[in-house]
Image (cartoon, rainbow over all chains, first blue to last red; front, top):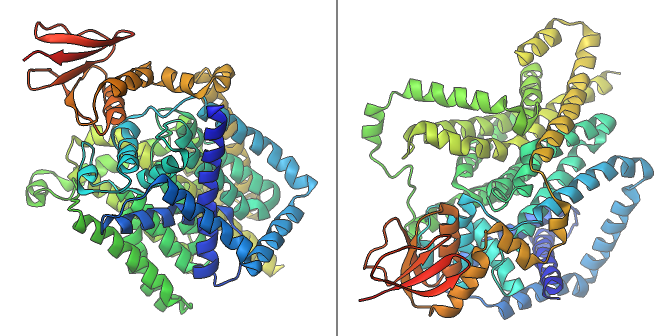
Length: 446
Length: 146
């Protein structure tokens, strides 16, 4: 019976993330126009909870289970009380329902079966991995137990310079459940995984059978589902970064720049590895606006720089230095040959991309379209901006491998597959956008 | 090599090849994804019965019995207690440190007198100054005699 109630409260906690994202999007981003997208709502919901708890930590305000349930109940009441939102929501759900025809269901049944199998494997175990037990879940348990972030629990026995989106959302989940559970909390990354797959499907479904092929490449790349299904990785934050990158790059290609800024920012609040992407976005957005003469809302710049300021300001306020950057860089530059180190890292990435047991031939497909459709980047400049952000990200990965506090080879061995995971879905989306760009122009020529 | 061949065929091929090759590549990648996923899935030797077990049993199984040991420890140790976890298995050690929060237990490789309590996982820790105050399925909590 306890398991049943835990399941109910876990489901309610997940629902609370969706509702928070929905309400925030409706009132603040799309200004009372509902663009129904569950993946965006879930991503925003996780982000809102994180930012809310981070802001409460500054004056040292704590939260309790009653408070969390009350906030969730209040947010859930909004679509009921606001009749306009309620009606828009009903219409959006009906519109989604109409899109499901027999042909789509035929495509989706094997996908749903795969997701079901992944769920069975995931919920056959609890979290049992290094990063999760040493950092993420340790922080989450402490944040939940104390009811807030304090200087002491932030600088506990774990690495303090890691960002806190995953532990904070897990702590919110624990408040719902009334206890810290390494089993039920897997529902957060699992929902992110389902949303990631769903969002990717939404993007590629227009290409019919080929679109289904793209979806299979993503869903059945062994390391994507393996991250969720394996107890060693199910508590890691990398899949959340993948999810945010997919949303950020996806909205960038759709020219919804405010969302891109927010999602790049939230990726940066999930793992420090993603911060260079946010910096790249903030630097490149004004340049590309000038180059393309596209209308970019001021809010996009404000959101990008605001998220960056929040990230850096938070680290400064709580005295969270980076273990990679807080070194004597002069000594490193003078003693480590940068060319050899870089070549070693590049070779490591090349080997990783060829690792079919993790990625199938997904990276081959990505590289093929990046090279074959290189001309497209100069026609569709926002795709070029996406490519440049990936360039910034990979440069930062290689730089971190250069200034690493541990041995370069060990660092690469223990982390390169996680970095590849972070960018893989978004890179696959970029490859898809390149592949269909030709089809679009062919259609126009006809 | 495959990439170089694919790109060479693509760039040197006629319009028909340019049209067909991307689709063939996507189909091949999808089929290979199914193949590699099946191989990986068979490697984990998944037993579906574990899914239907009670949650506590699953958690205890994953944590190699440390979940139920942590419950016993939390009952015994006051919240302000301090001690050491003898470092035999890093994952189990990290797990126990997390489970014992807010009790302050650090991981040590040699448990000395500075530890008030010592948690030993999976095996006893013999020392004349150690008194076993809790024993649970080959896991031990020692109090150090002053």
